[in-house]
Length: 423
Image (cartoon, rainbow, N blue to C red; front, top):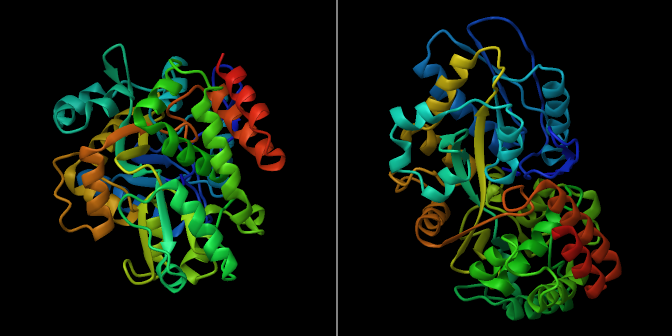
């Protein structure tokens, strides 16, 4: 789920909408037709691990529906922004794909509120999904008791990846209980030894806000996070100021070439030993492994410093168009991708965690087993950056405020901008 340059128009209000960062480079396609045996699947999954994961879903669907052809309508580039722009145009032109990728929470609610997506409650009923998917996730795709999205996997947004050879050489030891204070001190140590401390794919506009998002969680904790995103705590709260100050301490350690890098290019730099750390969702895991990096030898991981015990949800979800050309096939797609076998195969390629808690993850790699344990036991918080926790207007304001703060380092102006956006 790369999860994301994420600035697009909302369907109903035509305001800017930031969705999630799940997109790398690759070929794209997207043909429409009237063939009753053709299903169009629209996404922004085009990087190596994403494309492999999508093929597993297609394989599961075609196995359950022999004779049906799947058109892969993935649109490459911009971390999802290009795909969202294309989708917006098509929806406005009454040319909806049969099924398309989105995220729960605020993102899917844009479509539900505009009556653009079909009720998938029958899929939940026939496949007993309500018994095996966490209630918080079901609630995040529901309205008035009806479910409108089927999720394939949950990415953890708050992961700190590190190049093990570089950290070992520097005497840096990210481990359980790693704190934000230790992290900043280690960044300084790495830089003093001539190592670029942080890779950041800032060309994808979600990456820098996500670094702040994870830093904010390290200060607020999950309860404080939920208080902020629900409006119980104001955005000019001292804890937000503290997080901004901590974020400012990290910025001098970011790769000087970050503005030219996409998230997956930054991940490759980490694997190649050109930087020590990357704070990125675990879609990075799929790219690291796909590129030949070895877990435990070439790279390691911990929860982003100070966020242990929290799981930032960035969830891959599919909806079916209310006016889709092949609504019955869309329903069958939703059913096929929700099975245990499909979720296991998909998430193994994607680097994410099955949302079904009855999936046996013992065959998954060590990282994914640990992520699954965290998903099933730690506190869930929804991502702002990836379109789940807050409305589209605040998402955009959050991203813009972070961009301006990177230049100004003005804490008071930053938190005032966030407080004003939340009103």
